[in-house]
Amino acid sequence: MKIILTGTPGTGKTTVAKKLSEELEVPVIDLNQLLSREYVIEKDTERESLVVDVERAVSEIKLPAECIIEGHLAHFLDSKFVVVLRCKPKELTQRLKNKNWPIKKVKENIEAEALNIISDEARDMNDKVFDIDTSHKSPAEVVEMVKTAIKGKLKAEKYDFLELL
Ligand SMILES: Nc1ncnc2c1ncn2[C@@H]1O[C@H](COP(=O)(O)OP(=O)(O)OP(=O)(O)O)[C@@H](O)[C@H]1O
Ligand SMILES: [Mg+2]
Image 1 (cartoon, rainbow, N blue to C red):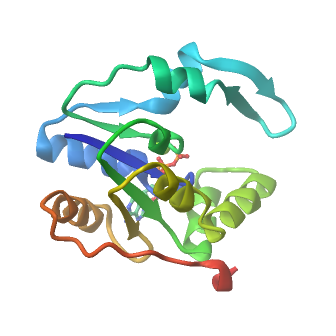
Image 2: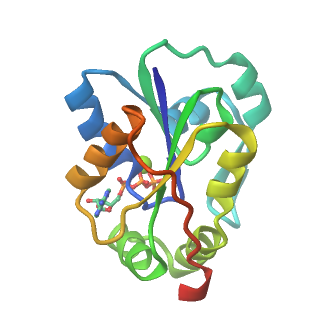
């Protein structure tokens, strides 16, 4: 199975993907790394980010049958199984500050998370989408929840963090 792990920066995709990969013995594909190697259109200097050709990437990237694909654009790829990692504004702010992100970018991402942008995008594109709230959980607990979802035993939940902004 192709497992997509998506979510706003700082929600824990890389951390969870690594642990899940060790437990399931399935390789991880870092989508951002792949995109930055082959699909950059331009550099957005103001936002300190790369603009990538997602459409071309989606049509060209061939994924192995069994893998974990992690990245904040991973839900644009074709998969039957998508996990959106979520995090409440207060904890996400702390996580991004710990990564030394500039305050402007922290704010941008907190807003995007509170507006459920990635979660809604993922639902527009895929049938089976599981949101997991990682706030106040350990990475190990989140990994267990992903495994429960794979077994078809996780209740599909939707979160709205807007009022917590
Ligand atoms: N329940 C949790 N699940 C995942 N990460 C957690 C959790 N609780 C705390 N963390 C911490 O939050 C941080 C998440 O960082 P990580 O790099 O994994 O996020 P990311 O979603 O890959 O971000 P980016 O999109 O910037 O690559 C790590 O320092 C991790 O230890
Ligand atoms: Mg990451």
